[in-house]
Image 1 (cartoon, rainbow, N blue to C red):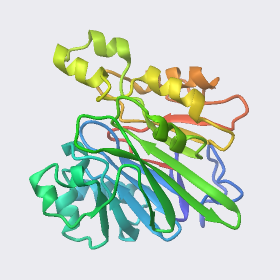
Image 2: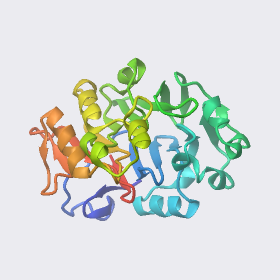
Image 3: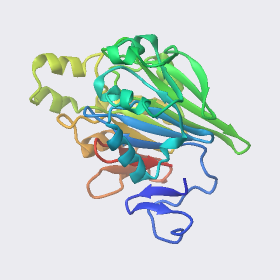
Image 4: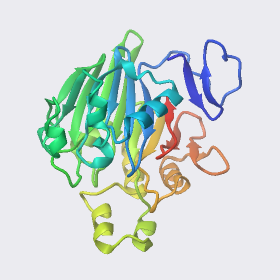
Length: 299
């Protein structure tokens, strides 16, 4: 990929290098990039771009929409060499069968996830554990168990090494708690994509029935803004450059509320008038929010 995503659009580094943009590309190019195509209860998909190909995490979008959003960010889906499915809820797998009709690379999930829906059971999964390790597209991938109301879900850590050092990325959504292994593997990554699903007060006073409120806010539901903020105090280290708030509820959260909560935990300040992005005073750390319909790239 020869560009980067900014508030000005996708720029081609070969021809637009002199155009103004909020952040210059780093002097030493990172080894991995995160492309969030969709994040939310209506569909999820993300691409981790590595040196030897890309990994698609979940596919809860139609093929047409998946490819449209990838094209919008300049993501070459022909480079996808591995698909990893975190769990079997429909907003993470509804597009998988159609995608696999024109895909012959690796397809990975736990046995619980692969058998969680009839149509998933027909797909040629390579089974992995929820505390496993494997190589994919030039990246070391480690899994850790998450806590959600499904069979056997997991989150992910990616690491990639070169002569210039090690790059790392953590990815965790759809969990009510963060266990010991999750905290260990998500710690001090350069890019941290972490669920910040709901504001507790909005959930408590919102329109959801009592049973659904209990599910969302429970140990097998979703991380609240406050839970994510508390975790970030331990997870963010000197190497962390970007925190991405993931899987925001459209009913029980707002990007500005999530970012304010996370920023307060890390001493960050608003980077725009709407408080949908924040940065620490030294500019070393950026906090932003992924959206249901706002594809984004993190360098």
